[in-house]
Length: 308
Image (cartoon, rainbow, N blue to C red; front, top):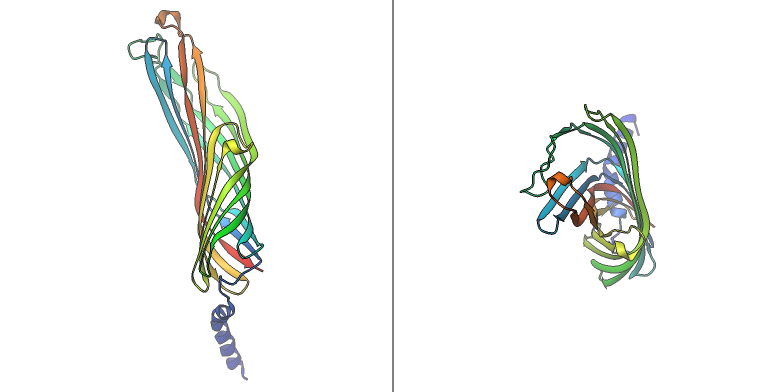
Protein backbone atom coordinates (compact mmCIF):
# COMPACT_ATOMS: atom_id res chain seq x y z
CA UNK A 1 0.00 0.00 0.00
CA UNK A 2 1.50 3.32 -1.09
CA UNK A 3 1.48 6.56 0.94
CA UNK A 4 -1.66 7.99 -0.72
CA UNK A 5 -3.55 4.73 -0.16
CA UNK A 6 -2.69 4.80 3.54
CA UNK A 7 -3.94 8.41 3.81
CA UNK A 8 -7.18 7.54 2.03
CA UNK A 9 -7.70 4.53 4.32
CA UNK A 10 -7.11 6.67 7.45
CA UNK A 11 -9.56 9.34 6.28
CA UNK A 12 -12.20 6.72 5.51
CA UNK A 13 -11.71 5.16 8.95
CA UNK A 14 -12.10 8.57 10.64
CA UNK A 15 -15.30 9.25 8.70
CA UNK A 16 -16.70 5.86 9.71
CA UNK A 17 -15.84 6.29 13.41
CA UNK A 18 -19.16 7.94 14.46
CA UNK A 19 -21.08 5.19 12.68
CA UNK A 20 -18.96 2.56 14.43
CA UNK A 21 -19.79 4.17 17.79
CA UNK A 22 -23.47 4.17 16.92
CA UNK A 23 -23.29 0.52 15.95
CA UNK A 24 -21.78 -0.35 19.36
CA UNK A 25 -24.31 1.75 21.24
CA UNK A 26 -27.00 -0.03 23.19
CA UNK A 27 -30.55 0.94 24.03
CA UNK A 28 -31.19 3.12 27.08
CA UNK A 29 -33.79 0.50 27.95
CA UNK A 30 -30.88 -1.88 28.67
CA UNK A 31 -30.19 -1.65 32.41
CA UNK A 32 -26.98 -0.19 33.84
CA UNK A 33 -26.01 -0.69 37.47
CA UNK A 34 -24.35 2.73 37.82
CA UNK A 35 -24.78 6.02 35.95
CA UNK A 36 -22.58 9.08 36.49
CA UNK A 37 -23.39 12.47 34.93
CA UNK A 38 -20.71 15.14 34.96
CA UNK A 39 -21.98 18.50 33.75
CA UNK A 40 -21.10 22.15 33.35
CA UNK A 41 -23.90 24.35 34.64
CA UNK A 42 -24.24 28.01 33.59
CA UNK A 43 -26.77 29.53 36.02
CA UNK A 44 -28.14 33.02 36.39
CA UNK A 45 -29.29 34.10 39.84
CA UNK A 46 -31.94 36.51 41.03
CA UNK A 47 -32.55 37.72 44.59
CA UNK A 48 -35.87 39.44 45.21
CA UNK A 49 -37.28 41.03 48.36
CA UNK A 50 -40.76 42.27 49.14
CA UNK A 51 -42.16 43.81 52.30
CA UNK A 52 -45.77 44.56 53.22
CA UNK A 53 -47.02 46.02 56.45
CA UNK A 54 -49.37 48.29 58.35
CA UNK A 55 -48.56 51.33 60.52
CA UNK A 56 -51.17 52.56 63.01
CA UNK A 57 -51.39 54.92 65.96
CA UNK A 58 -54.70 53.44 67.08
CA UNK A 59 -56.81 55.94 65.14
CA UNK A 60 -55.24 56.13 61.70
CA UNK A 61 -53.77 53.34 59.60
CA UNK A 62 -51.44 53.34 56.59
CA UNK A 63 -50.32 50.44 54.42
CA UNK A 64 -46.58 50.05 53.76
CA UNK A 65 -45.05 48.33 50.75
CA UNK A 66 -41.53 48.00 49.33
CA UNK A 67 -39.84 45.67 46.81
CA UNK A 68 -36.50 45.21 45.09
CA UNK A 69 -34.38 42.64 43.30
CA UNK A 70 -30.76 41.95 42.32
CA UNK A 71 -29.84 39.98 39.20
CA UNK A 72 -26.53 38.16 38.70
CA UNK A 73 -25.29 36.90 35.32
CA UNK A 74 -24.26 33.30 34.82
CA UNK A 75 -20.88 31.59 34.86
CA UNK A 76 -20.07 27.93 34.29
CA UNK A 77 -20.04 25.85 37.47
CA UNK A 78 -19.65 22.09 38.11
CA UNK A 79 -22.66 19.86 38.55
CA UNK A 80 -22.79 16.13 39.26
CA UNK A 81 -25.36 13.36 39.47
CA UNK A 82 -24.91 9.69 40.40
CA UNK A 83 -27.47 6.88 40.19
CA UNK A 84 -27.16 3.42 41.74
CA UNK A 85 -29.80 1.13 40.26
CA UNK A 86 -30.28 -1.46 42.98
CA UNK A 87 -33.12 -3.31 41.22
CA UNK A 88 -35.08 -2.68 37.98
CA UNK A 89 -37.50 -0.49 39.98
CA UNK A 90 -35.37 0.86 42.83
CA UNK A 91 -32.48 3.30 42.73
CA UNK A 92 -30.52 5.77 44.84
CA UNK A 93 -29.82 9.15 43.22
CA UNK A 94 -27.33 11.79 44.33
CA UNK A 95 -27.34 15.38 43.01
CA UNK A 96 -24.79 18.14 43.63
CA UNK A 97 -24.76 21.85 42.68
CA UNK A 98 -22.17 24.51 43.36
CA UNK A 99 -22.94 28.18 42.65
CA UNK A 100 -20.55 31.04 43.46
CA UNK A 101 -20.41 34.54 42.10
CA UNK A 102 -18.82 37.86 43.00
CA UNK A 103 -20.52 41.09 41.97
CA UNK A 104 -20.22 44.85 42.46
CA UNK A 105 -23.11 47.28 42.75
CA UNK A 106 -23.25 51.08 43.00
CA UNK A 107 -25.96 53.35 44.39
CA UNK A 108 -25.49 56.93 43.21
CA UNK A 109 -27.30 58.55 46.14
CA UNK A 110 -30.27 60.91 46.18
CA UNK A 111 -32.31 63.36 48.25
CA UNK A 112 -35.14 61.91 50.34
CA UNK A 113 -38.02 63.90 51.81
CA UNK A 114 -39.12 62.34 55.12
CA UNK A 115 -42.72 63.24 54.28
CA UNK A 116 -45.28 61.96 56.74
CA UNK A 117 -46.21 58.76 58.41
CA UNK A 118 -49.82 59.45 57.60
CA UNK A 119 -51.09 61.40 54.60
CA UNK A 120 -52.70 64.14 56.70
CA UNK A 121 -49.77 64.59 59.12
CA UNK A 122 -46.64 66.37 57.86
CA UNK A 123 -43.55 65.73 59.96
CA UNK A 124 -41.07 68.56 60.48
CA UNK A 125 -37.66 68.43 58.80
CA UNK A 126 -35.92 69.20 55.52
CA UNK A 127 -35.04 66.71 52.77
CA UNK A 128 -32.09 64.48 53.66
CA UNK A 129 -29.18 63.67 51.33
CA UNK A 130 -28.45 59.94 51.07
CA UNK A 131 -24.77 59.30 50.15
CA UNK A 132 -23.64 57.13 47.24
CA UNK A 133 -22.60 53.59 48.16
CA UNK A 134 -20.26 51.07 46.49
CA UNK A 135 -20.97 47.46 47.40
CA UNK A 136 -18.81 44.41 46.64
CA UNK A 137 -20.48 41.12 47.38
CA UNK A 138 -20.07 37.37 47.08
CA UNK A 139 -22.92 34.89 46.90
CA UNK A 140 -22.42 31.14 47.23
CA UNK A 141 -24.91 28.30 47.26
CA UNK A 142 -24.22 24.57 47.60
CA UNK A 143 -26.86 21.89 47.35
CA UNK A 144 -26.48 18.13 47.77
CA UNK A 145 -29.32 15.61 47.90
CA UNK A 146 -29.71 11.84 48.19
CA UNK A 147 -33.02 10.38 47.04
CA UNK A 148 -34.55 6.90 47.08
CA UNK A 149 -36.50 6.40 43.85
CA UNK A 150 -39.13 3.71 43.25
CA UNK A 151 -40.48 3.28 39.71
CA UNK A 152 -44.26 3.27 40.10
CA UNK A 153 -44.50 2.82 36.31
CA UNK A 154 -41.77 0.75 34.63
CA UNK A 155 -42.02 -0.10 30.92
CA UNK A 156 -39.27 -0.52 28.30
CA UNK A 157 -39.85 3.04 27.04
CA UNK A 158 -41.27 4.95 30.01
CA UNK A 159 -40.55 5.25 33.73
CA UNK A 160 -42.20 7.27 36.47
CA UNK A 161 -40.43 7.25 39.81
CA UNK A 162 -41.45 8.63 43.19
CA UNK A 163 -39.38 8.81 46.31
CA UNK A 164 -38.08 10.45 49.46
CA UNK A 165 -34.68 11.88 50.22
CA UNK A 166 -32.47 14.18 52.25
CA UNK A 167 -31.18 17.55 51.09
CA UNK A 168 -28.29 19.51 52.57
CA UNK A 169 -28.05 23.16 51.54
CA UNK A 170 -25.61 25.95 52.35
CA UNK A 171 -26.35 29.57 51.46
CA UNK A 172 -23.81 32.32 52.19
CA UNK A 173 -23.66 36.02 51.36
CA UNK A 174 -20.82 38.43 52.10
CA UNK A 175 -20.67 42.14 51.29
CA UNK A 176 -18.33 45.07 51.79
CA UNK A 177 -19.84 48.54 51.50
CA UNK A 178 -18.29 51.99 51.26
CA UNK A 179 -20.19 55.29 51.34
CA UNK A 180 -18.83 58.60 50.03
CA UNK A 181 -20.33 60.68 52.83
CA UNK A 182 -22.24 63.98 52.67
CA UNK A 183 -22.10 67.37 54.38
CA UNK A 184 -23.95 65.84 57.32
CA UNK A 185 -22.54 62.29 57.26
CA UNK A 186 -18.94 61.08 57.31
CA UNK A 187 -17.75 58.37 54.89
CA UNK A 188 -18.22 54.87 56.26
CA UNK A 189 -16.93 51.35 55.59
CA UNK A 190 -18.71 48.21 56.68
CA UNK A 191 -18.46 44.45 56.14
CA UNK A 192 -21.39 42.11 56.70
CA UNK A 193 -21.86 38.36 56.29
CA UNK A 194 -24.79 35.95 56.49
CA UNK A 195 -24.80 32.15 56.33
CA UNK A 196 -27.33 29.40 56.72
CA UNK A 197 -26.88 25.67 56.28
CA UNK A 198 -28.78 22.61 57.35
CA UNK A 199 -30.47 19.37 56.34
CA UNK A 200 -34.07 18.62 55.49
CA UNK A 201 -36.11 15.68 54.14
CA UNK A 202 -37.52 16.18 50.66
CA UNK A 203 -39.95 14.72 48.13
CA UNK A 204 -38.68 13.47 44.76
CA UNK A 205 -40.16 12.55 41.38
CA UNK A 206 -38.68 11.50 38.02
CA UNK A 207 -40.00 10.87 34.50
CA UNK A 208 -37.83 9.07 31.93
CA UNK A 209 -38.87 8.48 28.30
CA UNK A 210 -36.89 6.61 25.63
CA UNK A 211 -38.41 7.70 22.28
CA UNK A 212 -35.69 5.93 20.23
CA UNK A 213 -33.04 3.29 21.03
CA UNK A 214 -30.20 5.77 21.73
CA UNK A 215 -32.24 8.73 22.99
CA UNK A 216 -33.55 9.45 26.49
CA UNK A 217 -35.52 12.41 27.85
CA UNK A 218 -35.67 12.83 31.63
CA UNK A 219 -37.48 15.26 33.94
CA UNK A 220 -36.73 15.50 37.66
CA UNK A 221 -38.26 17.46 40.50
CA UNK A 222 -37.67 17.94 44.24
CA UNK A 223 -39.59 19.82 46.92
CA UNK A 224 -39.03 20.52 50.60
CA UNK A 225 -40.56 22.72 53.26
CA UNK A 226 -38.10 24.58 55.50
CA UNK A 227 -40.09 23.54 58.58
CA UNK A 228 -39.24 19.88 57.89
CA UNK A 229 -35.58 20.21 58.85
CA UNK A 230 -33.03 22.51 60.51
CA UNK A 231 -31.96 24.54 57.46
CA UNK A 232 -33.33 27.92 58.58
CA UNK A 233 -35.84 29.32 61.07
CA UNK A 234 -37.91 31.28 58.53
CA UNK A 235 -40.95 29.76 56.86
CA UNK A 236 -40.51 28.81 53.25
CA UNK A 237 -39.97 26.10 50.69
CA UNK A 238 -37.45 24.89 48.13
CA UNK A 239 -38.36 23.72 44.62
CA UNK A 240 -36.16 22.26 41.92
CA UNK A 241 -36.90 21.10 38.37
CA UNK A 242 -34.65 19.81 35.61
CA UNK A 243 -35.01 18.71 31.98
CA UNK A 244 -32.36 16.53 30.34
CA UNK A 245 -31.87 15.03 26.87
CA UNK A 246 -29.26 12.29 26.38
CA UNK A 247 -27.77 10.55 23.33
CA UNK A 248 -26.00 7.21 23.80
CA UNK A 249 -22.77 7.39 21.77
CA UNK A 250 -21.31 4.05 22.86
CA UNK A 251 -22.38 1.28 25.18
CA UNK A 252 -20.82 3.12 28.13
CA UNK A 253 -20.81 6.81 27.19
CA UNK A 254 -23.60 9.30 26.44
CA UNK A 255 -23.77 13.04 25.84
CA UNK A 256 -26.43 15.13 27.58
CA UNK A 257 -27.75 18.68 27.57
CA UNK A 258 -30.59 20.30 29.47
CA UNK A 259 -31.87 23.05 31.71
CA UNK A 260 -32.04 23.25 35.50
CA UNK A 261 -34.01 25.55 37.77
CA UNK A 262 -34.38 25.86 41.52
CA UNK A 263 -35.84 28.41 43.92
CA UNK A 264 -35.68 29.05 47.66
CA UNK A 265 -38.53 31.21 48.95
CA UNK A 266 -38.62 32.48 52.55
CA UNK A 267 -40.93 34.70 54.57
CA UNK A 268 -40.93 36.09 58.10
CA UNK A 269 -43.24 38.34 60.13
CA UNK A 270 -42.01 41.46 61.88
CA UNK A 271 -43.48 43.72 64.54
CA UNK A 272 -42.25 46.92 66.22
CA UNK A 273 -43.13 50.44 67.34
CA UNK A 274 -41.61 53.92 67.54
CA UNK A 275 -42.47 57.37 68.90
CA UNK A 276 -42.54 60.27 66.39
CA UNK A 277 -41.36 63.75 67.52
CA UNK A 278 -43.80 65.34 70.04
CA UNK A 279 -44.50 68.30 67.73
CA UNK A 280 -46.00 65.93 65.14
CA UNK A 281 -49.03 65.35 67.34
CA UNK A 282 -48.85 61.61 66.61
CA UNK A 283 -48.63 59.07 69.41
CA UNK A 284 -46.79 55.75 69.42
CA UNK A 285 -46.93 54.08 66.01
CA UNK A 286 -47.14 50.28 65.84
CA UNK A 287 -45.79 48.63 62.69
CA UNK A 288 -46.34 45.01 61.67
CA UNK A 289 -46.05 43.07 58.45
CA UNK A 290 -44.24 40.39 56.50
CA UNK A 291 -40.96 40.29 54.57
CA UNK A 292 -40.58 37.77 51.73
CA UNK A 293 -37.33 36.86 50.03
CA UNK A 294 -36.68 34.70 47.00
CA UNK A 295 -33.43 33.24 45.67
CA UNK A 296 -33.79 31.77 42.18
CA UNK A 297 -31.12 30.04 40.09
CA UNK A 298 -31.62 28.75 36.56
CA UNK A 299 -29.60 28.02 33.43
CA UNK A 300 -28.45 25.52 30.78
CA UNK A 301 -26.11 22.60 31.37
CA UNK A 302 -24.25 20.04 29.25
CA UNK A 303 -21.89 17.16 29.88
CA UNK A 304 -21.05 13.48 29.64
CA UNK A 305 -22.83 10.44 31.09
CA UNK A 306 -20.93 7.26 32.00
CA UNK A 307 -22.83 3.95 32.33
CA UNK A 308 -21.25 0.89 33.88
